[in-house]
Length: 278
Image (cartoon, rainbow, N blue to C red; front, side):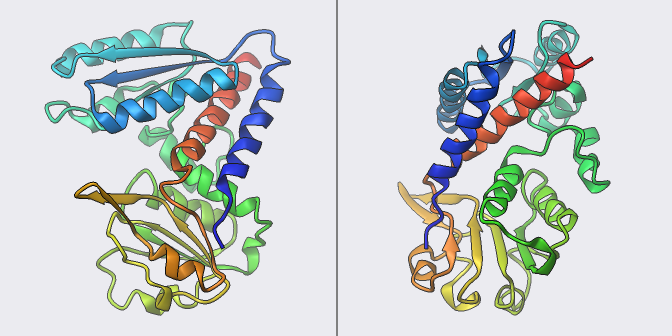
C-alpha cells in the first residue's frame, strides 16, 4: 500500500497556517542560492511556493555561480549579524570551487533552520529536542508517527551513509526506542537485517537495492530518494513489487519535496516562536 504523504503534507501545511494567522508578525525565511543548478532552482521554487501558502515572508538571495568563497562567507557573516534575519538556509549543492563544509560551519547555529551545522547535529545524539530536526529525517519520523507506530516494539533498519539523512534518521529512531540497525550499500547479505525489520528506511541512491524478497509482508518502507538515468527515474526500492506485499511504502518522487519543505516550514515557525519568546 502506498502511503498517502500528500495528505500528510497538506495536514502539516494547514496546521502551520492556522498558527501563523494568529501571530502579530509573520515568520521570515531567507534562502541563499548560488548558481542555477536545475534541481536547486526547482527546490527553491517549492520553498517559495509553500512559504507563501503558509503566509511567511520569503527572501531569495540568488548569487552568481562564480562568486568567490570569500565573498559568500562575507554575505553569510552579514546574515549572521543582521537582527532582522532570524533564520536562513544555504541551498546545496554549491559550486565545486566552494567548500560546503566551511560554508555550513560558518552559519550561525541559531539561524541554521536546515539543521546542518555540526553544533546542531550533535544535539540529536543527546536527545536535545529544544531546537530543530533536519528536514528529511523529520518527515520520515512524521510519517511514521502519523501511522500510529509504537516504536517500543519495532525493529528498524536504516540503509545509507549520509550526514543529512542516515545519521540523524538512525539516531531519531533510537531516541524513539526502536531497536535500530544501521546498514549501507556495502553491507553483505543485507536481507539478513531487512527481512526481520518492521521499518526500513532507504537512502543510498542505488536503484533497486531493496527488493520485495528482502522484506516481510507487513513492514513499512520509507524510500527517501531516487536516481535519474537517461531521463528515467529509478527508486532505491522495487516499489511496485513491494506494494503487492501489502507492505506500506512511500511513493517517490511523489511529494518528497513537499514533505521536506513542510518540515522546513515547521522548523521556521518553531524558530520564530523560540526567538520571539525571549
